[in-house]
Length: 295
Image (cartoon, rainbow, N blue to C red):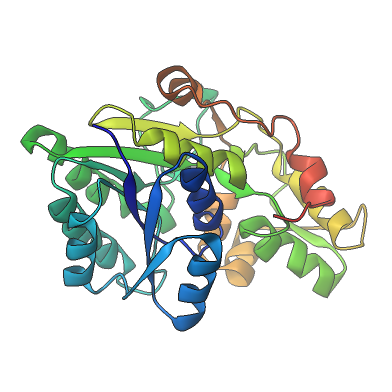
């Protein structure tokens, strides 16, 4: 089907803003959920039409989705009970969009330590922080058997423009403490993707077949220690890193520390092959983290 109008959740967020831009470049009109007046202004400035409401407003989600050709669900609720919020929001959006494409956000951490290069068929061994995802994703993908058109995009660690998790948990602490943290010895690898590249994959996923699942990484796999060193440089403390045990990391960062300690080599080959996705930011994660460009 031809997609001319997309409803988006999370449109004013870190990944949402470039996704709105990617859709508009394709001539697709965008409506997007806005939880606050500030979010509504951000969306309007981007060229999207804001729809006031929250992820818990399932009636609003269902109605907005019913007025669009397709839906991209980027929004999340990180508070306790966020898994149920995500599930109920997904069900409302799927009900609203009907047979139209529905692109759901997962995350590549669910594969745990990959023991080599892994693709979408790898058995999942998620850390505690993402263990809830599979049940929700199974529910979403099951809609393909009953006339729905779900697609799952699973980003790696998203970087770019001096924001995101790397800035929050590595660069900002380096500014405060004079050194960037490293969980363990830092030799574990990360699957990463530039925020502008993952936005392009979300837009391309609208044309994917029902039930498709895509890992969104650039095939670049820097080590955690390399990422931390780049973050320390960005913070003005080149070469300064602080090694933490996993226990100390959990105390300082919370449960996300377990995810940062994963050793993951992932491939986005399926996404490139099936959607024509061509990441533009290849082998640039470390320079971009150390010297971020403005988005």
